[in-house]
Picture 1 (cartoon, helix red, strand yellow):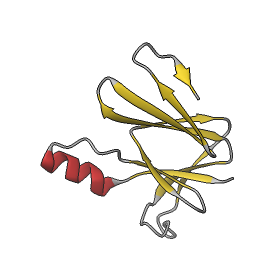
Picture 2: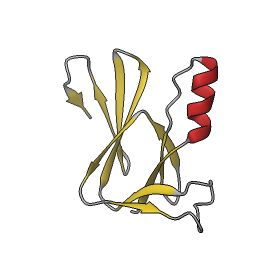
Picture 3: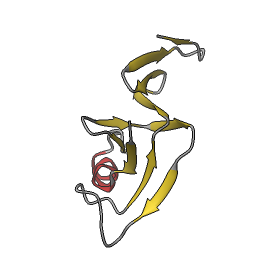
Length: 100
């Protein structure tokens, strides 16, 4: 399944103003948009700059891949959850061990 990953500049600006730490990376598939603080791509990918034909969300630069993507979200500095696309979820404890 093709995934597109881009940085949401609006969330970066909002975080700057409010002091919040909302996730700013968006992982898009044909059926979902997921927000992450970090993304790991397990395979080949390409970075695309398309100023004349942006994505429907307005992104002009994005990463495209068919590889597995791990979306890492943080609710608090010591609390991290990992979502593996497609359709698997993993939790990472403070000591770095992963469970599915």
